[in-house]
Length: 298
Image (cartoon, rainbow, N blue to C red; front, side):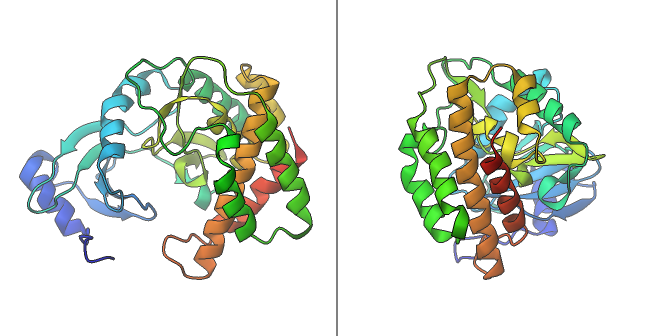
C-alpha cells in the first residue's frame, strides 16, 4: 500500500454505508479476493460494494454507473448493475458504488467443463452486446485499436515471456492480425476486458460477466478474442458459427489480440511467481493454455 492509498476495511465500508446509505449498513460485509483498480466487498447475499482503489480517476466507475443500467436489461447473462452511489467524503475521498452481486466463481479460480454450452452462451452474450452504440458512448483510449497500433504492447509482452519453440508461430499469428483489414462498421458496444477474472462460471459453464469499466464503442474484435482466451480447446469454431457476424478480417484481428492477451496473462503469472506487485500466479497456466488454443486456430 502506498502512502496515498487508504486501507479499505470492512469497518470503513460499514461506516460509509451508515453515512450515505444507512438502510444497507446492517447487512453482512465480506471481502472479495482479487481486484486491482477497485476492491470488492460482498454486501449481504445480493449486493456488492465496489471501492475505487488503484484507479487514479473515477472514470471507470462513473462509466459503469452511466451505461450498465442501459445495457443490462437486454443482456442474456447477469452483469453487475449499480443500485446506489457512494460519493467522495472526508472518510473516503474516492467513489464507491453498490451493485448487484453476480453469483458464481471467477473463471481464474474455476473451470469450464461444458464447452459447447459455454461457447453458445458467450456467442449469445456478445451478439446481444455488440450493437451500434449511441454517439455519446465512451471511446476507447488505450484499448480497442487495430493490432497494427498495438505492436509496442505486443512486443513488450512477447520479449518478457520465454516462448522457446513457440515464438515464431506466435509472431506469425500477430503479423497476420496486423495485416488484416480494419473494422469498417459503425462503433459497437464492446466490453473491452474479457479475461478469466472478469467472467463468472457455475455448473461448468459461463454464468455471468463482470467489470465493465473498460467498455467502449468500437471494433468488437477485442471481445471476440475471448473465443480463445476463455473457452476450452476446440470451441472457437463453434463460437464463431453461433456469433454469426464475424468476417474473416475480424477473426484474424481477434486471434492476434487473443495472442497478445494470452501473453499478458502469462506475464502476470510470471510476476506473481516472482512476488511482484499486481502479479497473479494462477494466471500463468491460464495464459499458456489460451496461447496454445490460439496457435491451433479456429
